[in-house]
Amino acid sequence: LALYILVAGVLCIYINYDCDRQRQEFRRTSGKCKIWGKAPSKIEATYTTTSGETKTSLLLTSGWWGLARHFHYVPEILAAFFWTVPALFNHFLPYFYVVFLTILLFDRAKRDDDRCRSKYGKYWKLYCNKVPYKIIPGIY
Image (cartoon, rainbow, N blue to C red; front, top):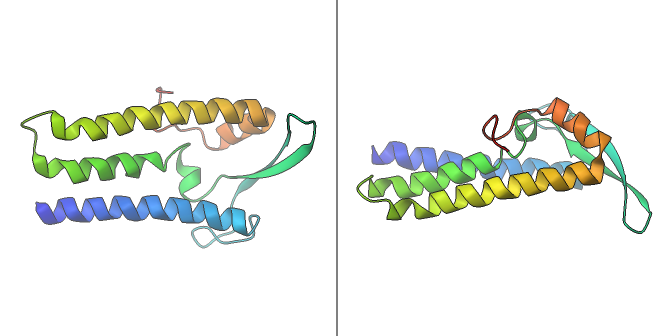
């Protein structure tokens, strides 16, 4: 059982790392890279800064980032759970961090969505149509 918990925890850490790696590689190469062996799917979004300057951003819609909006929070929460589960379920206190992290990341996901909706407008709607799933459907 301990080995399964360890493997699941390490897998969550790897997935979290790989999510970040994909995004960083995509940004570093301006989208001219391979994600899971293929050219990445992306949306070229323009936006206007508060000073009136028009800028462009690339929104990644493939790889881990194409599975679900804020998918990278799932392995982070699960890793915290797998680090805690050896304490078993006799008391709530060991799971405080998992609950705290879950609340924190759900709130961050909502704030990120609100900020991106405001920043990108129609491009964010297009992104949401391409990557429609949330961490847990129906919960924002």
